Length: 130
Image (cartoon, rainbow, N blue to C red):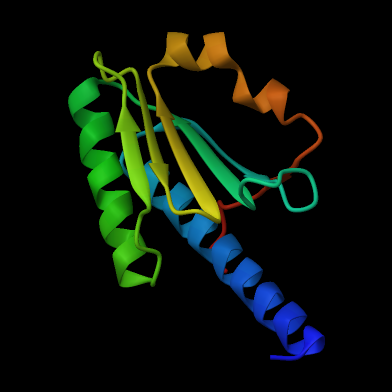
């Protein structure tokens, strides 16, 4: 693969990541997660391209949403790499490599404040289909 082909393939994968992140955010909103945000970390983070952050209403709801996001990923070609859940289920991370989903209990989210950590990131609007 030439350098130009690698750049084109990376760009295509990045666009797919963007679409997946937006769709995951819509799903989280549809499942009653609150304050859902999609942050574009391309050019900022060496770890991933997008993070999706949302607050859940209960550990059961958060676990259910994480499973649904996992199914969405599988359907769209994003098999999750790993998932981490803290013992009290106040923070669930679903890692798809390019896209990382964070589901928080509200007070845990305020404590870690990922939005402030990534304040240089562009916030994407997922409210419209597209």
